[in-house]
Image 1 (cartoon, rainbow, N blue to C red):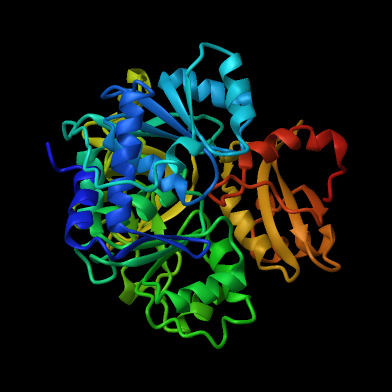
Image 2 (cartoon, rainbow, N blue to C red):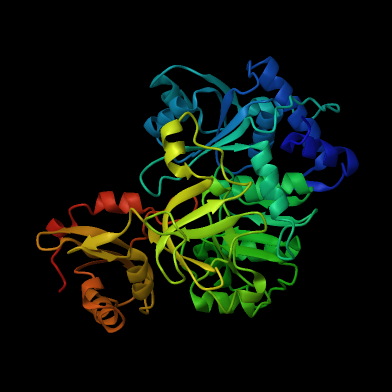
Length: 506
């Protein structure tokens, strides 16, 4: 079977061997070099690390030039890639290693002890140091590749855990290539040869799927950064005539605040997609003034990252909408009876299309619950207008039920975010003797913003029952997941006794 990521890499290695495939810290790697290096890497995994077709192989380390080389080597070896969060502790990694049944882990420098401690907590696995791959960078031509069938698992992505649960989402070559195809069929999409700037971790869905894998299949150039440095990002956008960038609003906000942004030529940018949180209208305006339309997306790992995105012509007119689906992917809102909800009615967002996961690794019960009658049930609340444009409302799990009334934390977060001096906010449920639950807002501020100011503003724009009864004001940043999203689970855990530690503000 040749319709694989590895086959695409080999094609570009043959047809444009001198074109740049990867850039990391000014170090460049051409397609010819990438094909040969990953061929040697795949051969090493098979012959020296005993990786067999279908074996799950972990990859542990931060962004680097070797990370994508290791990932593509694993795919070309016939192994199933399991990207690992390099910020996890041994117990967390052990859980994933056990659930995925990893037989080997490729380990970046500085993470050998973490891998060893993880191995010590259970059955051992082969550890392949990055130095093994680094030593294979130079050598002769090598087109080694073990092909797999289109529907065999090729990647298992463990969800970020924003809901407190981590599940192994299976992606196949058919799934991934369907995602690539769908993203090339609209004028705002990716194109063969597209240059993409990646300031997110490679080990998570956006970086892996929309960064490395789409770029590899389309023979583009991926500029990988170890972290987000706003001024440097602006410089790279211009230097490489970047055509695609994606991330959470925080990334676009930071870049737009860089001193170099105002005078930058961003005319090369054709694809700019943003998701994971509400996008402030002033942020949309800042980028549109530079000729760049930020397109709001709705997606999840189970749908390959992006299920729907606002079309460019509607990006400014419908800033809180996420489009009507994609060419082959449908996004609907179902009511509690499993029927399509009426326009404006809140219900569960459901998705179906060729980029949807076939299921969760070794978890038929969760798979059966999530994939019903051909639809992926997201566990997210949304609503659609009469034209089918969807809007994300909230996580089902995140709803605050106060005296039998549902309160959406997202609505409160949006309102509080309008207060001058508020940097970021997370709203969670606090225990309440009278109402069962009541809203509590954890707010990071700059300046003289206090709880009274926040309550006053909320009272002016929200019904009384929605106004938070607890407001914790801090100058410390809120914890975030590696994807950039605010880590609600961590905040809930830290403030589970907020009703005991803090006084009500109203």
